[in-house]
Image (cartoon, rainbow, N blue to C red; front, side, top):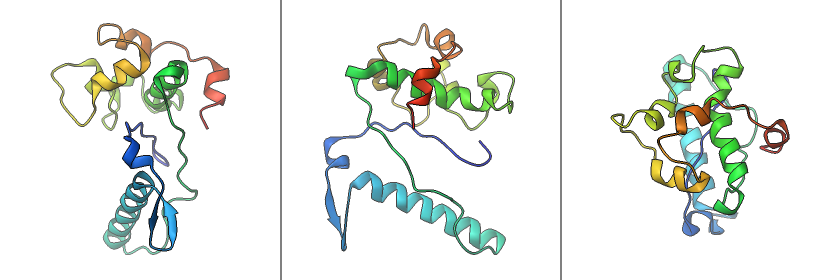
Length: 145
């Protein structure tokens, strides 16, 4: 997306356990996301001689669990369908900066842990393409954020 991004991350207990970082209480994942966004902002600012923040709002996250695979499935497909819904592409596989191709093409290897995603959503690689194009229930989409 031109003005935001979504990421679905598999976390360990250690990465979400509260800990003190300086005078703040945070988590490893919060610190990692903060560091990523801060580094990205610094690089863009340096490249274009900009100053200030690139991101308007704080990072939001919600935990997913296998017990709530409807929510996980909705998030997964919302992320992939977002550019299609916004009219940026005609097909999900047209977006270069998406993990969708990694999930539908077994020869594409990237950073996704596909098996974990399949288990979390109780789906398999044989039906991922058709399921990804399915309509999302609006009541589930409203609860993403």
